[in-house]
Figure 1 (cartoon, rainbow, N blue to C red):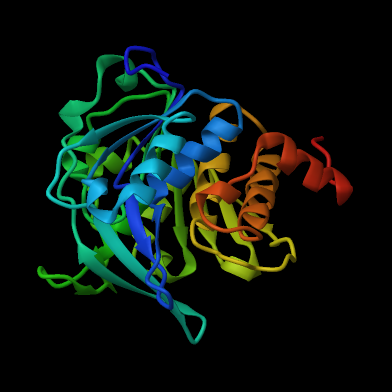
Figure 2: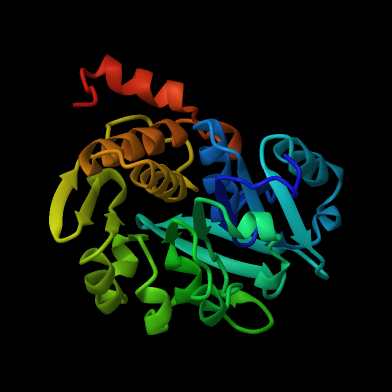
Length: 293
């Protein structure tokens, strides 16, 4: 898709390089990538605004980025390096280390056609989006996964720690969708309460499912029991499906079930290649006797 054509779903955030904690091998990641691929595989024209320098990690990473760019339009702002993470699971909790940071994304780099996207997903992973600028965006549906605004690490790189979320009122009042993890939600209670009064909020709990609140009404969504091969990006896939289906005015409960099924399919495979299509998600639910009502 050309940058001159208006996409339906725009994800803004760092496409990352994720290092395997055991082997040190690298693959692409980041919420923006997982979310935009999900939208594309659900049939939407999708695009990413990001920043980084990916050829520093060799031909394989550059080739992977080029391959995904056939599915998703990308604007990559120049940087000295990509944002690089190592994710480890310790005692059931994810520990993250930042090795390099690509820097802030300039939202003025959004083409005019991209600004008119039906859905814009603010997908920070490492403090790369200025929330004061983001409050000026006005798509039909504005969603956010705020994890990157809640991460802090030493300037030279190191272990990530969670910090309380502090979003400007202007942005909070514009958000239609908000997805965050069970570890994050206690640090974002004010934002959750405000957004849930007028939009949809989901708190994901991994194998314990999710709680979805839509304009004050709450739904408990169980996780589908599957064999987990790799859970990175599962929450991002969940968020993208929830956002795009609610933007299409699907019922909240069905949208949440589709989101949970998409996450279940994602974690059975490895990396972004395991992001499922809409057809695969619907077939997964059909096999379990779940149908849209």
